[in-house]
Image (cartoon, rainbow, N blue to C red):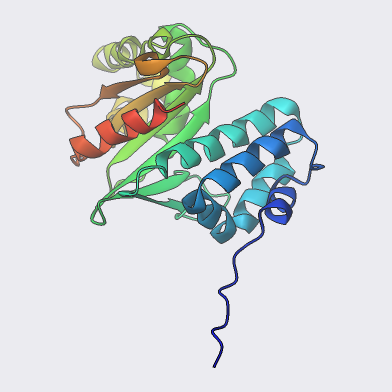
Length: 239
C-alpha cells in the first residue's frame, strides 16, 4: 500500500490568516519569513492560530500591531532553542495571566509575560508598567517579565532602579500609593513582588550582548531555574 503523505501546513495561507493583511504587507512578509525559517514556530502558530488571530483583530492601530508582533517575535526567537517549549495563554485567552508558559528541558516550568514599552522611560516611569504586570502574576509557578524596548541597548532600561524605588515606597509604608494602583497596600505589593523571579529586557534594534539584559529577584518565593533564564537571555540576542 502506498504511503499516505503527511499533510504539512502551507505557509502563505497561515500568514494571511494570522495577520489578515495582504501578502505584500511588510508585517505579513516578516511573519512569512519566520514561518518559513522555523518549523517549530510554524507548529506553534498553527496550534494557536485562533488565539493569535483574535489578538491581531483587536490591534486597531500600528502601535498595537507592534505590541502583538513583539510577542510573536519573542516566541520565534525562544523556539529556536529545542529545549524550550511554549504554551500560549495557558491561563485562558483574554484573562489577566501571562502570555506564555515556558517548559525548559521538559520538566522546568515558568510563566513569561511579554510587554512592549512604546518609549523607554526613566526608572520612575517604568514603575507604572511594572506594577501593572505584577498584578498578572499567578502564585503557583515562577514568573518572568520580558520587556521589549526600542533604542540601541537593553541597558537603557534600569530595572533595578525601578525596583528600588518601589521597595523604598513599600518600606516607608506608603499604603495609599499602592492602594491607588490596585494593591491591598504595601502587603499586597510585596505578595505580588515575591512572585516575580526575573525581568528580561530585550532591545531588538541593538547588536550582540546589548540586545538583552537580565534582572533577577533573589527573594522570589518560588525559585526559577537560573539556566533557563540565561538560555532565554541568549535566545533574545539572536539576530
